[in-house]
Image 1 (cartoon, rainbow, N blue to C red):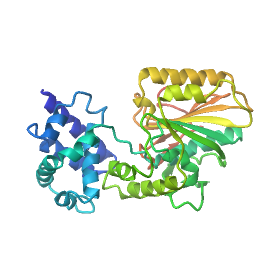
Image 2 (image 1 turned 120 degrees about the horizontal axis):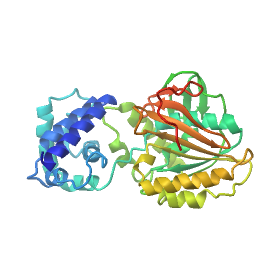
Image 3 (image 1 turned 60 degrees about the vertical axis):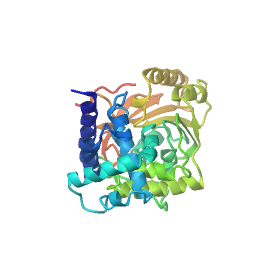
Length: 357
């Protein structure tokens, strides 16, 4: 099999994931791109000769984001009429128009291939908030948040959203952004997290104002609810931008998470669908710093590690909480975009895979 065939197959794999996550148009777009890419054109040559891992690099979604930006900006009118809210077009019709757009707009699309997608999925705030309820219930202290891989920091401001979790209200009741995921299992703890500080880091942080259209372009075009909630979150962030520093996660956490804690606050290190993309050395350093700081934690100055990630041995994304003092617990299984939460805290962890640091 040729390199080009490998790349086309990666687009089809991405199409399958999009279909499973409720985006039939983006699935069709990835499938049509697998046909439309032509090595005789600049974009086709670059994509079909991609030097890295096309799946790990989210190559298909990089190109899909660039195409969505063209459509949203009114620069590809013939392609726009095939996009939602229109009905799904025939694959051959979409592929034919994509060939034209890929050739005509190569200069605009090349920059989208230079960087991975940064969706900063706001639906994940509901999952993270359920974890903060557990932290607040355990320690009854104000929370200081430290987010790794924060992107634009939209999930750092989760207490500014109106969130409903298994009948429990959390966040800001009057917020213009409401998150109400499907809830399964017993309700979470009924607590009221108080955020006393919020800080984030990202290798390539995004400004919520200047990069608004870039963030929206990464959302799959047939998922209107996701587009609407991202727009509302960006509006809130523009009024009071979350603090996100540029830097390496390990360097940053080693500086900000001192081994000698202050009292009267619970420090919470959190991340969502980010840790797996860190280099192994970065992961190891983050774990080591948490262990070191955790060894110095106590009931008056506790530490928590909240992880919403997909582990290799699990079929679903999980929400896991490690507390110092305390233990490591599986709290919930969850949809990748936060559409549903299956709260399992207190249930036997049969079949969940190992709970580990």
